[in-house]
Image 1: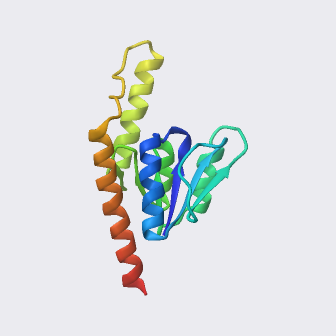
Image 2: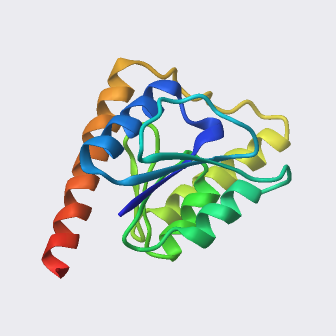
Length: 155
C-alpha cells in the first residue's frame, strides 16, 4: 500500500497525520504538487514535484496509484478519476469517495460551479477545525487498517 497526497490543497494538520501514519505502518507516502509543500519527513515520505500546468499533479497521481493504494484529495474530479481506477480515496474532512457516491458528488460540484458562473452566490466551505481533523483521522485510520488487512489476506 502506498499513500498519494494531492498536497497543494491539503491542510498542514492532515499532512502531519499522513506522515505519522506512513511511519507507523511503514507505508510509502508521496506528496504530489508543482512546488515544495512543507510536511514532516521520515524514511517513508517523498515529495514529487511535477511541472506547472493544469492537472499535472492529478495526472501523476492517477498514473501511479493502484487499487492497493490510498489517495487523499479534496479535488472531486481527481477523486472521480481515481475511483474509476479502483483507488481508495478520502478527502481532508474524512469523506470517502466510492463508486456509489462519486457521481452524485461530481453532479453537485458541477451544479454549484454553474450557479457561481451565473453570478449566484453559493455556499462557502465551512472552516477546517478540530472536528474535521478528527473525522479525517478516523476515516484515514479505518481505510489504512482495511487496506493493510487486505494485503495480509492476499499473502
